[in-house]
Length: 259
Image (tube, rainbow, N blue to C red):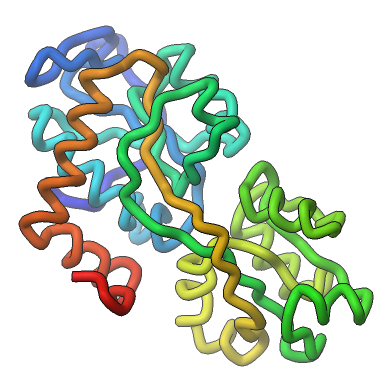
């Protein structure tokens, strides 16, 4: 199954659900595994040549293959992942969007086992001279973050009132246009941005922030069969080397000590 998938624009009446996939797993649309995400969020999910690709997309493709269905991707607002609204309303089977597992979110949804250990990063404009969050505060510079994310939560806990942006693209544009001097966002996203020479010329990684975060895939509370299918696919991918290959393809070199 190809990792590149066309972004879902809607579903026709011929594929309306609910239905069953392999192993008796319920799906909202026959023959499909419908994934809620929030675009763009490279390298986890983003559009490339008219298709949605990325690390999360590739991992969920493995799950879809196990279920003998095709993955269908629906772009949704990120705040839905805090409440599980699109899962509870039956619009999606799961959510995959670089989502940190938190106690608050677990009140509304069930998570797969962790599939990614994440850190936050402070990305600053070079002209700001910012070298850390403490330095940013001392210099009275403006901080930005993506709305409803753990990066935004972390900034607030550190005493900041960050400018809130709807998407990661908006965060980056805020830096480019001088709306903010630095942003807190997931480190892999920063890695992806700095691969672009124009970004690398303007911005610098000021600080890595280890918050102990782990990503998981979300399902509707009580959807045990799908959650177990996700867990098995993650465990198998890590055991047979598929996970490492996808990590290196979409994110970069494996962290030291990981094999």
